[in-house]
Image 1 (tube, rainbow, N blue to C red):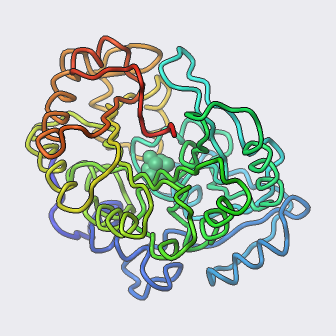
Image 2: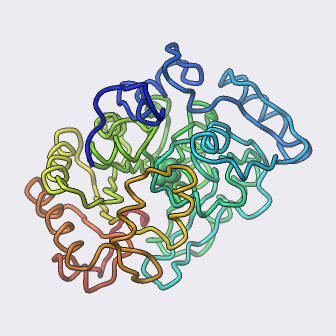
Image 3: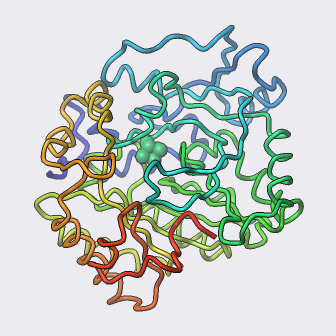
Length: 391
Ligand code: SF4
């Protein structure tokens, strides 16, 4: 996997989108309409559904973002499109609508390889274009990125959750399971509402924002009361250039992490998905060194690339030349997913863990959705688990 040279404009535009200079521009001032038209807008317009969307709030968001708001009678059928055209329809739009299902649900891993953490669904899907995104599969029947705007119902559920009898280690609401909760926050302004809500109305509960965004400026001065955790997902530069289109560069995310930490937020990191390619060893060690130049995370959670069986078709319909399609063919079936063979991932995890420990020996390091023998093989203890998604 090589880094594309500069900002080439020929061929498929995703190469251009991957240029860090362009990606960074996505969330600078007046982000909904960047000054330079080289950059495709991350979000081009907002949609809302008559009778199913909090009208005043949808108008407020549109005014705040300076984006057109299109009112529809129902969600349009957009399946059938392919490639960039498909992505532009699915992920260049935010559908604003009310959520009728519960906002708070407990995560249940099909074979018990994960704690039963709680997720808070403020967004379905995402406006970034990572090639490996499992949400292509999760939201295959409703792929338009969505933000739920009936905050009153959400906040009622949070208060009830806060007052219920839930073990301490599960008293965290994960906003990053079904979307990136900060990717379009400069458009929705949602984080600015929910972060100060917690110390006032739900002081026994924490929020977890898992993100690849670097748009943290709007949350730095909020009264967060130590109840919001900002967890940045980062990866090597080649993975970013090749696979994480329209996201800010890893270095921009780390700079944002440093700002969040300075503002008193707990900062965690995820190195996930770890991808095996020719220069992986040097690149992941360099990434770890870079992390500690910027920030002192409280926890680092590592996860390998582990697609579900059905994901390849969905990657193929959006990125038919994706390197991941070749990688998928070399993976083995394990625990309902495709994974790198055990010996290889032990080697990769060990390398990253050793690099982390050279900087900080006592940091909480966890593996995401790995069985106990893998933890043991890399020198980690699964007991007393302190991973990304727990309090
Ligand atoms: S940031 Fe996460 S949710 Fe968004 S496209 Fe990438 S993998 Fe998917």
